[in-house]
Image 1 (cartoon, rainbow, N blue to C red):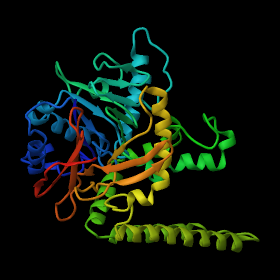
Image 2 (image 1 turned 90 degrees about the horizontal axis):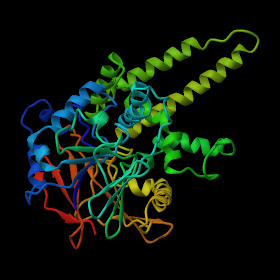
Image 3 (image 1 turned 90 degrees about the vertical axis):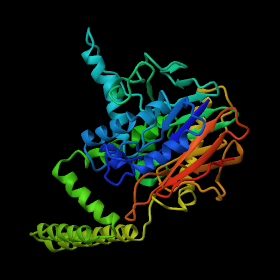
Image 4 (image 1 turned 45 degrees about the vertical axis):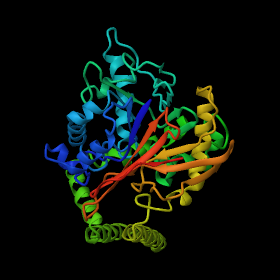
Length: 426
């Protein structure tokens, strides 16, 4: 079995390295990627799109869909593989929401005879065996076509007699000589798992979870569903406001924070003007309100300063160390999930994720995360991203798995200078 893993293409965004390709124009990064992917001239058994394939955070669904369709329907991609496995990320979580809505609501109520809607699945883990067969747990085992979690909603992107498209969320397990976990990685960040933490902190006794004090993978998705939908696509679908947001983000990416600080100042002034309390204790209410506004102002300003200094998930070389506790917790509940769905040893050798846009380098020692039931720890590797900086560079990477190789996992980088030689991940 041969698979290729790509993450963070951000199709639809003007800053994507593939933006010109999606407009029908020549695109060197794409040509470099295709050349590096086809040294043997053979098709891959699977192409794994490991999150943020679409960028719905700032652009409309229609724009992102057209860009993704243009990418997938190029002859090079068509000839690269027949099978795509899509694992949504934070910028395209809404695609998982749309997909579940389509399966569990739309198709059922439009059936003849009409059926009642059913509950969402929230989590559908995928397992790839050494023989290349994909099992979508609770849905099918070994078969692609004809199943409700294959094709369907995405048939307009990837169709043809031999073309197959499956969706797993949020985990895909590659179980060959050992086990590798593939996930986009947004649940390692506070903002994407924050509602779940709040539920555990303040309402655990009233939370109908499987185990007190913790959440399963499915429950993690459930509790963070509202913010995931909001942050993934709400701004991108908000018309004139999304255009405004795009202009602000473009300025920030160029190091210009003028609009951000001007908007913050104007909104703070508006709040101050509207919070005028009368009555006997009006002065106390006004004092308390202005103190709250002052604290909010300082909090927002501190976030602006972090952006100015490039802090956060993106391009952070210390990401794993800074999010170690979250990654450990996620690996633990992923091991528990995998132990319930597979006969294989539930301890993982590797975690491959995207999200940060900073790929693991050929000379870097993998970050090792100690996890229960894994005596050697789990080695973490990142597949980078395809968003261009103000110099037009990006840090894309592709992870390759070949089940018959002595060292099955390799990776190569692609940037504006071209593709690197592959290097081992073991």
